[in-house]
Amino acid sequence: MITAIVFVKTAVDKIPEVAETLAALDGVSEVYSVTGQIDLVAMVRVRTHEEISDVVADAINKVPGVTETETHIAFRAYSQHDLETAFSLGLD
Image (tube, rainbow, N blue to C red; front, side, top):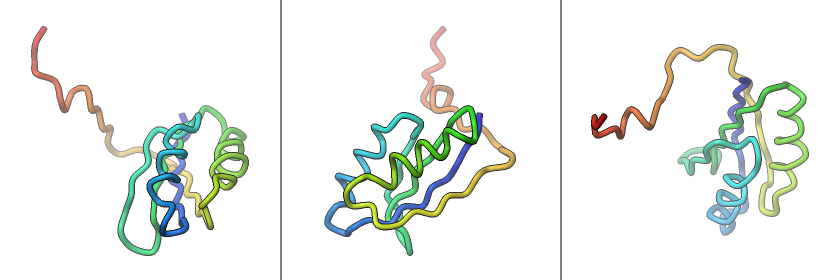
C-alpha cells in the first residue's frame, strides 16, 4: 500500500463541497479540513505509484474549486491508526 498526503488549496467558499467530493473519490481514504496555508489534507492510499497520478492529477486536481495541490509520498509508517480498536467496546 502506498500512502500519499495531498495538501489541497480551494476557493474559500467551496471548502465543504470540495471536501465531500474528494472524500468520495476512489483512492482517497480521508479528508481533513485544516488551519494554515492549506485548506484540506487528503490521504490517498493506493497499490501502485501510477494510481497516485490517477487519483491526484486525474481526479483531485479536476474537482471544481480546487486551486492547487501539493503531494507528499510516505516512505515509511511509524504507527498504525486502527479506528476499530480505538472505538471497540471490548465485547467478544
